[in-house]
Length: 301
Image (cartoon, rainbow, N blue to C red; front, side, top):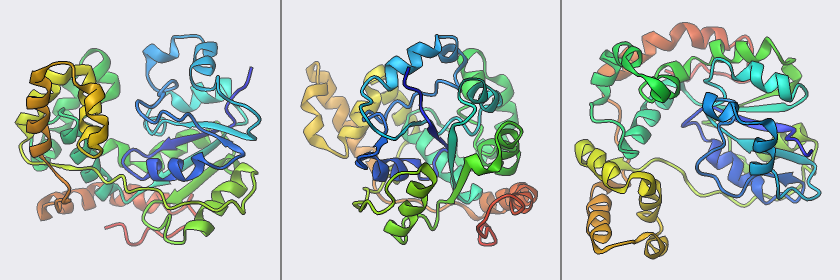
């Protein structure tokens, strides 16, 4: 059985897509070519109930002679049981974490949830009602916690859980804001960690910045219309050549144009009152994080 020997664990909305795309073409690295949906095997309890062999057969059946074999699930950093589950199956696995200013990460996470048609509230409303909404979630949503925008940014708390099971040498923590500024040097650091040829030349990955939504309530209605095909149509707003294969009836085209007109590429700025709230909320965790990372986080404000 071919098992993964590295995992890209998160954080969500922190640049893991950028990281993984830059790694994909390295001849000694295997990552599943299909990026969405992510496996989430060790995070989602209904996935983890399936045999470990299912996970291996589903995501690693195309492995050939690659030296570093892995996958990316940005949920792994957040799940409370994930570290233990991974350790039980893969005790020697190498774990990669991309850490972004948690204030900006929460804003980016919110914008992505809006894009996904899962959020109608303003950002300020989500912060004011976050605890209430988390407690009200039931069934699978209680586990996924789509409205827990701040919990996913408590990096020290989450990384401490991994350090309970894995030696620090098996963890690579990268700073999202600076990663890619010196492209070859930054990826060389990752390749060295994975023990593959560090001199491989990486092509600049595309930008994965979330698109912005004009009307949140319309986006929710469009998700309900497209249902399981929604992500395909969102992607088609970026690459219209993918549109034809997703069209099943005339109404699809009409709804796609509504979707396309509801999206803009300009990134919106966070409101000042939201930023102040998040600065106060994350202050303690950021100070604690300084004790386990090897980069400065003094600019995370």
